[in-house]
Image (cartoon, rainbow, N blue to C red; front, side, top):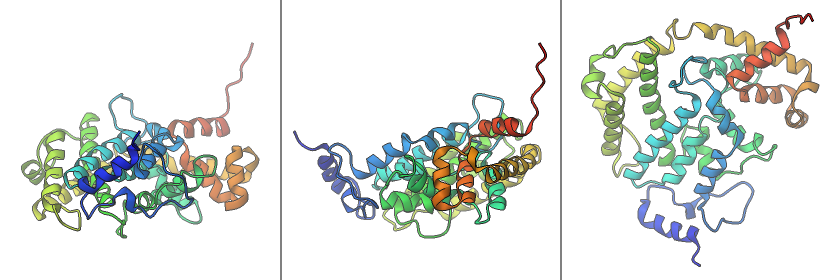
Length: 335
């Protein structure tokens, strides 16, 4: 029987252009492993991320609206999946490595906190070393998963996860695709959710957005993705055309003004900091009540680091449950 992995690696020589990262050219894993007979190294990264605990927790973490009452609002998990689909479409059209692109996309927000960026800001103020979700995403895959062993992902996947939001070099065009896909996904689906929540109404977006990008979610995504593919074709950088970049920047500024900083949409976020601070302080003062795996991390990485890892990994609902258990008096049961 032929080795399916080797067949796929040969296929990549034709399917993935020279500007992309072919599986046979990976810089490898921190801990060397024997190859899988079926999957390439980047396919294995996709599977490891998809099956890890941090990935599953994303379904109960905020994207924009805190604990929304409704079945159709995005969560951090659905955001991640939308980023992955946009990114794969761009990578396939540009003849880049779809598997590496997908691995980076699926892992890029694993370190996100409960309550979205409000939680990130709170932990950044609380933890003495500061907190940035992209650094925590790398820590999740390197240190926290698999009982402290980490997922042992390929170098290219790890560097793409770490640098998906910053201006530092991302190491590959596949990582650049994820960075731009993240933005394409969130401004569009957050507009959709804002309209569903009654924060915005269809047609509120600026005229340049309606004229150059579109008036419907699918129309806007298709327009931006198509522009990125045309503009980036046979280039060493992933980018939009000047006209599209201008419209997308106006779109982004509009979303920050009308949604991300809207007091109606964000009115409950002021409570997040106090809740997380109280929980964080409790476990710093009572380390014996940390789960066993985080107590082990405290022994090697320090108590405050371990508590920050634990709190940042909590889901929105679990934070509320922990807070109520620790700080809200229970009603007296009289029989």
